[in-house]
Amino acid sequence: MAREVKATLSAWTCQDVADWLTQEGFSEYSDLLCRQHKIDGPTLLALSEDDLKQPPIKMTVLGDIKRLMSKINKLRIQDPDFEVGVFSNGLDVMQMLQKSQKSQSLTAIPSKTGALDEIDGVSSSTSHSQLARRRSQPRYQTSFSQDLSIKSRSLDTELWKTFLSFVYVFAVFLLTAFVMVIVHDRVPDMQKYPPLPDIFLDNMPYVPWAFAACELTGVILVCMWCGTLFFHKHRFILLRRMFSLMGTVYLLRCITMLITSLSVPGRHLHCVGKGVHFRWNHTLRYGDMWSRVQRTFEIWKGLGMTLQGVKSCGDYMFSGHTVIITTLNFFITEYTPSDSCYYLHLASWVLNIFGIFFILAAHEHYSIDVFIAFYLTSRLFMYYHTLANNRSLMQQDARRTRIWFPMFSFFESHCDGAVPNEYEWPQLTWPKLLKNFLPGEKWVVNHEEIKVTNDTKEKEKVKKT
Image (cartoon, rainbow, N blue to C red; front, side, top):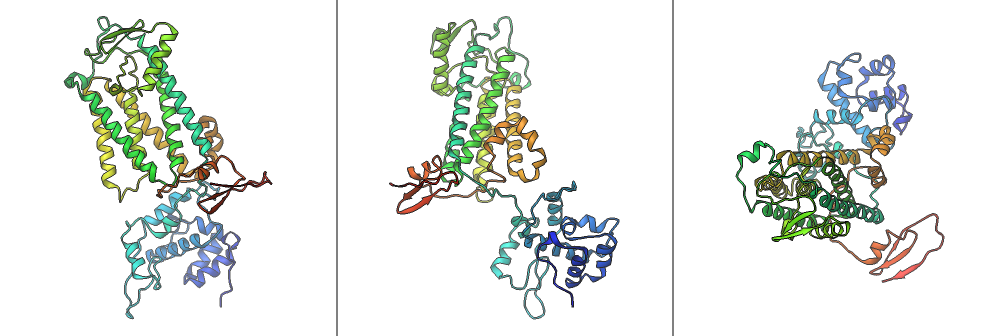
């Protein structure tokens, strides 16, 4: 009779693995794996299906390979010390797990006695409702992949960081408005520098109402995003990410606008430099600093929208309107479930695409302005979330991330994984909000005590609403 093996896989020796193989019915492989190749507990966790098939192990019976990998997957779930990315031998454990999961599916067949036999992790004790729910999942999504999905174990609201991100984007928007005033003075004379050749603009007639339609699509996307934020459980983390990303992209836009001044993309635009600005059939001069400050406030107050009466020239490289609608689209589709919100995602993408088309149809930007804006915004969004959702896999790059992306390291310091799409009816009571700013205090909200611990504070106060 085989002896009991240790409960923690990290403590398993080669003999423990051999005993486990014998208990699970793989005794013919114990000599190959444990004596010839020195497979102990941690190494057993790192094995992939390719390792078993390829030299030097080179198992030849496909059924044994599948069954052994299924047993190893069960060990990974049960072992308390197993975490994705714990191995330091250069092996991409997450990629290995995904390959292993894709090669397996959850199925069950009735036995002669009418019970469900165990195949690939589905035991005879599994209820019919659980089995139906598992079968309704795609073949590559097993319960193992769900258990090992890298969800954040620390989702601190950190309202003070959200407030700092708002101050950041607020300051960047003010700077953008001031830069728009500066670049207006540098607009090249249309008589001397006509619009540049553009494949799309040269073949697309000017549509006067198109730019207003673009801004209307942006307003609709804002409403959709506000609805998502209202019900999302982690709304303040989402706001923090949106403010930091949008502020960074607009800061980059300020630099590109200052570096190069392009000629106006359409002859319908009445743009004159040297401190002259046309607005509502009036000629305004803002060559002195005070006039520039006033004009900056006008642009900022109107959010740079023509629907608010804002007219500007020179801010072409790259399109700010494209940045806004693309950012909103990506945040809406990222933080709403793809299965139950399919039509919401479809509407978001349609509005994004039509908004870009309306910008070009209005001849307000060159095609390259819109393309660069969409590319930079989408890539930065994806790169930011790739880092945020896989922090446990990138610890070796933590120092480089802090150097090149200090804002990301600051805002995401307490988020070590993906933010789940969880929803709730918001209870925006002041004590619940203030507890994030005043750690160590004790609050009573609706007769329910809320306590935030802080080791550095010994004194506790009780405040009632």
